[in-house]
Amino acid sequence: MKKIAWVLAAVLAIALLCSAAFAEGASLTVQGAGVVFVDADRATISLGVRETGTQLADVQSLVNEKMDSVIAALKDKGVSMEDISTNTIGIYPNYDYSTDVELIVGYTAYNSLYVTISDVENAGAYIDAAFAAGANNLDNVTFFASDTTEAGRQALTLAVENAREKAEVLAAAAGMRLGNILEIREGTADEYSMPVMYARAEDAGAGTQVIASQQRVNAAVNVTFELVAAE
Image 1 (cartoon, one colour):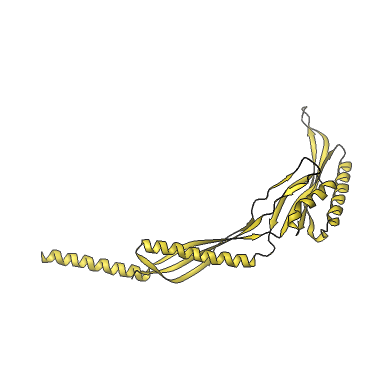
Image 2 (cartoon, rainbow, N blue to C red):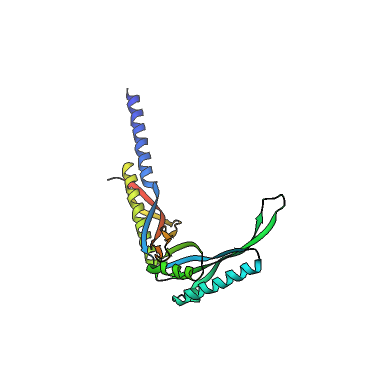
């Protein structure tokens, strides 16, 4: 009987020692995320000209003439040449596949621009001006914030707070509590604009409707906390 009592006491003592060791040396690493939305104050419009014809020189000439008119119209709207750059440019042949022999029956040439503006609320007016001058392709409209420094700081703060909240829940579930922060490592996070809705109305007098968006600034951190025994 005494032997059994001694064994039970020894097992209990070992369990207590293991628990104390766990409490003294344990740590918990969690990931936290933070998100801040910033109003966009800049927009990049991708648009251009695409033409098809039988003679390559004629097609190229037509595209160049229309692009010159488009650029002039954008400059008249107040866009600086520093904010206009080539996006894509190309020429490819068009084939007739109705016979066994592939025949080139014409060419398609295209040229598109990136146009960056700060008047985001009137982005549609710039698109309309370009189309009135000869543009016939609208590829995309992207909104972004020119300065996300402060938003990035806020997102990091939220990410650390989020990590602590998660860690407190996990520590409490394990019957422990958080001690000091042992390590903080910044994770990888992207910044991107919310999806943009745009549409060109069939009625030429109606104009293009563009809805400005916000830029989403993300932050991620990995935080390691010391775990201590709950009091």
